[in-house]
Image: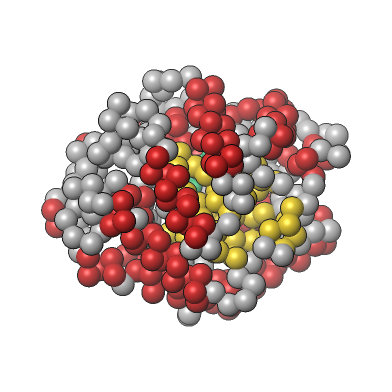
Length: 403
Ligand SMILES: Cc1cc2nc3c(=O)[nH]c(=O)nc-3n(C[C@H](O)[C@H](O)[C@H](O)COP(=O)(O)O)c2cc1C
């Protein structure tokens, strides 16, 4: 049996197989944060895809932390809608695939990428793209209020029927930016202890408040690949330096995190690192293979260093024809326990079931063209603009005509 089909026991729960539907924000929720028809359609595909773990997209813990007006946001008021939504996904997965997937909700504060930027510190590199002023710097007093907001969202997620929550720190959003706030004064800047304080306090608060059975996991940006002192997990020459990443993972594990979904880079600044592409808005300064090898290096390093950690690997969608072999290899090499598919999952949601049935069709695979991101950056709803007619038309009308 392929390793991809083997169930995995995690914290007393069974993940039916190793396939993870990665968080893929569609910017398509209703203004009250509830899933729209487009959001529902994407997750119904996830439920019928056979993936053992559905890692639902960025869900804002507070209105000011939303990156766009269509971002998901579970609240006390809209809880009944989320309850029905999660229950309907379980029903589809059970009826169509005979499995009960683990469903995680990703909790986020978008920080610099919020509708009104809320930044940790002045960042000369990121600000070339999105100018801000000192007024955008969040105060310590504001940051002090956030762990409670994460707890509220986690408790709501439990009531909604999610199996777990992800206290997310990656992709340059608030927690991740704080990790490199070397020059920020006060309790949240300077020392390693201060820079990691909010992330770890939030994790500890969520773990302490979590009802029996609610999983608490994290998506972590292991390295920003932005030169120190403006990036985390990276040295002054922009090489990987995992010294502090190791320290942080040790703290996360001590706080109760046993599963980490690894990602690298900042999609707003160096997207080729986060999701190696074949066509994008610029020519990447490295080959996609260099980026893919970096994922393996970082993940293998963390798996070797922290044997008790369950790790989700990322960045695979680029592979097309070799997709499943590379995914198997990632696990067999000891570089991941579960394998995540982002763009690949929205381009070809049935890839795993087709592969199981011997019908894997390379022509349906993600072409790594970056159109899903281009839609997002054009402030549209986002989906696969190659294989889904709705997004294809939207891309033609809203993005292609601007070029
Ligand atoms: C349109 C789009 C939306 C995304 N939304 C999220 C998100 O909500 N949360 C997150 O952690 N990552 C998000 N990502 C990153 C993906 O989860 C994934 O890490 C990345 O696409 C690389 O994996 P892949 O090669 O399988 O696509 C998004 C990526 C894209 C292209």
